[in-house]
Amino acid sequence: MASSPDFPRNLEPSQIALPVALSRGALIALPHPAAKTKTYEILRFQYNPETVTRARTGQWERKLDKKPTKAAQKKMEDDASSGGAIKSKSEVVSFKLVFDAAEMVMAGNDPASSAAAPGLGVMPELAILERFALGPDQVPDPPKKENEFALITLAPTEVLLVLGPRNFPGVITQMNIVEQRFNPYLVPIRAEVDIRFRILESTAVIVDKKTTKEVFEALQRQRRNLAAMAAGTGSSVTDAIAKAIKPPFWTKE
Image (cartoon, rainbow, N blue to C red; front, side, top):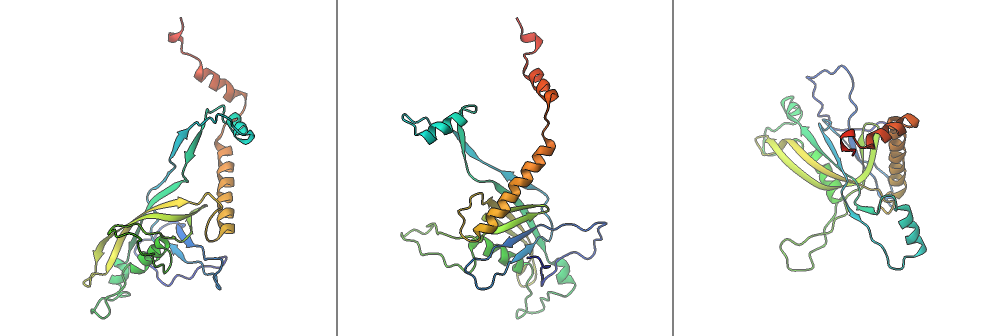
């Protein structure tokens, strides 16, 4: 991973000159530890997402055992200040990717002159995302019941989401592909992809536990260091808090 990746395709617009070089986001697939040769498949974003939504959902719970164990009692003591805890799922990152091969087609690098050679458009980029979301070369188990819409079990590829200085280990849990433009042979040359990416915050992962753990711990350290730069400390802050929670004069008797 230290060497520069080799990208066989380049969809970068050549008609736009930017004053600075942009750092491109990317998705990096983690190879299975049992693989003989470890190859890290990398999908570099053609365009960075305009918005990135990060959400965490949970449910507030306060469960008091009638006869708590020592560990449960200690936990209740630790949670006494907040009165309980939130049963939370891991963080979800949502973003939209755009892939456009129009300039490559117009430059003649993706010809569509006949049905025998219809071109590729953005199908290679979509294929990578589909492999990440569904798992590589996976054949789902047949449904056990006679149900037309039976759910199947998939093992998505564990990947790293690279957004500048931040790296998130996780899996794609939802993907919505909208193919927008086509060449004469119905090959998509532009597509927008909405992605929901669930962060793997647990070390109980399937593939590369060591890398996933290291990346998530590095993300936690980064958040801790950045939070220290924004958090105010000292007696002046304490005084400000005391003034903020002091009842206003019009509520006094």
